Image 1 (cartoon, helix red, strand yellow):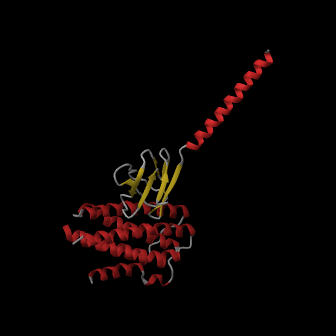
Image 2 (cartoon, chains in turn purple, brown):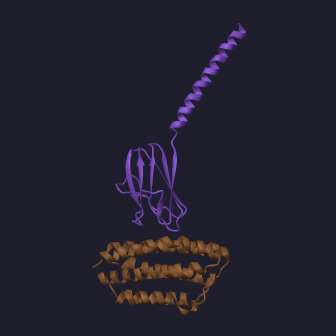
Length: 114
Length: 170
């Protein structure tokens, strides 16, 4: 009787562990990614990144001068990023976003959220 | 014609006979710091005197960027224990900068904007030539050389920016 109870309990444990594993796997697949963009040599590299909603784009200023990451329609704007500084943007809205450095305007880039 | 002679004057400052032989690292440090300071001083004047908003914006950018470059240059030479050493090039850069400031102070409005931007175009071109032909090839310390290489794209960007502003001024 007691051993049967133990067996049932063990079965429950196994099944709940299986459930947990499956949901962990599902969550891992949907886990938001972080995509890095370097600001270096007066350029954004890579110039264009493609991400999913919920992903984070992190710009790191590796240049000797300050820059900005300013989306043309105002969706995001880092303001001044000093040398060595970073800017993070969590992509929520789908679409193609063109941005530039408001200080050095030939510097342009894009974020595609799809 | 005037632009050509201005360019020649700046170029002369950066290619004086003292560097028939290459400048050493202490001299390069002095040239870099002076070259930046000269542009910061002109930028500060233009930030207050410029009439055109794009000229004013450019002037503020020059102050910010060249101040940033100088901060890193000073940090590096301090770390390397290099004492910047005055030389003919740094002295004539300073003299040229002082003359430019004196000239600009006598101007206002559109004439000021044009003179400031014309000088910026010639100055950045001359500094870039010096960086490429003299300073990078002569730098013996690897970190000093790396700093010059790292600074270069900013100067290229400034030159393009200045030329663009120049093309919009009447």
